[in-house]
View 1 (cartoon, rainbow, N blue to C red):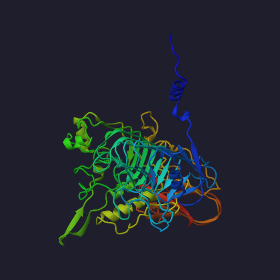
View 2: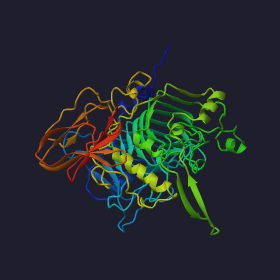
View 3: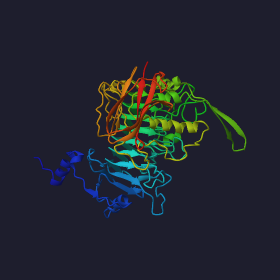
View 4: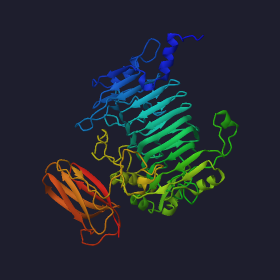
Amino acid sequence: MSKSLPVLTCTLLFLAMLPATAIAQSEMVIVWDGVPGQLETTITADTLADGSQAHDVYVLEHSRIYLQIDELQVENSFTVRGQAFDADVPASFPATVQPFPGPDGLSRYSAWPPGAHFRVNGDDVVLTLDNLLFNGAFADGSSHVWGVVAPQGADQTIKVENNVWSGYQLHITFGQNTSFHFNNSIFKSVPSYAGGVFFNGLFWGGGSWVGTIDSLTVTNSSIINTWGEALVVYEQVNYGLVDHTSFVNVVMHPLFFRGGNNMTFKNNLFYNTRIFGQSSHFAGTFGTVGPAGTGLMNILPIDAPDSTAIAAGRHWDHLNRNITWNNNAWANDEQVLAFWQEGPWEWEVTNDDGSTEVRQDTMFTVEAQNKFSSDTLRALMAVDPTIREFNNVETTPTLELDPQYLKLIIDRIRDFRDNEKHDTFLDEWWQYEADNNPVNVQWPIHEDLRYAADSPAATASETGGPVGDPRWVPVPVSVEEDVLPNTFALHQNYPNPFNPSTEIAFSLDEPSDVKLVVYNILGQAVRELASGSLAAGSYKYRWDGSSDAGLAVTSGLYIYTLSTGSRSVSRKMILVK
């Protein structure tokens, strides 16, 4: 004879069978009042008698900027979600969080450990950030806050979905077994501290002096204009996946060269990475291993763990490292390749004892740097079959991104390389901003990571489709863009690449004094195609590959810029002969 389950038990079983989204979550809309500190004081005060959060989800209004004065101390699980907004409505933008100084004009964000909007303290906490824009620049232009999240407890999970993080230097876990998931999001405009070198990235952890990582996933995302390592895994994660992500203009490695055990990189685009270059003086200092160069992908050999590592919970089989790179596309464009041929450099330094010495530095050959994998890595693959690299292809440099971003990055590297310190780039406001406003994030964002549909990257993924962040749909090369007279726009030249001539089209939304100028990769003006007052409307100019003096220029990358005094936009084109 069977017995029926108690009603409560049946209800619990039914709830357990439902998908997570079917279980109602309590929400609070934080109606924007414009008062700095509203976000953190509202969430902190919204607790029950036992200290738990009264609501599961805090909703921020779109097209509002929530100015945050104090770090939000996170002890419980909750979600912060931005309202949906209509991207076609003028002045509409994602709900934005931006740091603001205290009443005394000083930052209340910790200097160390790195300050962040959310300092996650409680064990087993799940913090979810959804459909938000985080702007790291203090609203008064005084400085930047270091990061968005700072995990510090045990077994915490950070979920980031459909976010834009702009102007942040670094996110480090000092916790144990942190899980960090960054999906369908953008991390961009990484500034570095004033005069700083390399100490930044999207996420750091995995042992050594920082906390440990349980899982690390970066998927369907973009990491753009990053001064340092994009991701740092000192030793290992229990599960790591980087899939369909675009790494563009990264000064150092996409993944720190030290370790990265249990990591898989697949279907990604690596475009202008390791820009700093590999050279004799910095061979051991910043990750270049051996005179043959590291290329884009490199890991170091490790020994079997000793008793100290085992006691610290960092125990792995050094011949079972489980690292895979497959179906990625990579390229370095002409600006990077030209920079790698600069030098040598020589400078004098004063030692601690007052003596002086002359230091010298010489770049490795382009061939040693412009490659996917290092000799060290290939040697490791020969002895450890769990380290795998296959179906990775070199692609063509056809990215739509404004070349001014890369130019300023290279200029800052030059400033450091000639004497091992910054003489020109002395503050943290050096990144290129198309609207000349480093304090507010331009929306829609100006960065454009589309590439040509006939590029090898467009068919390099595991499924035969495009690699990189899926939001950047490849651009058909045989279809000319529509020129709309009611917008200010500079369009891709057609054809591109070209020989012997190409057409450049643009449109003006109002009468303007314009200049349309072609530059070479050194930033030197080659040909002025248009100069003077033009009415609103659409225009086309043909360039025949000659200079202002009427001389034929050499094949290679050229940059054309349309400027009106208050606005400027650039694109790249390639002349082939």
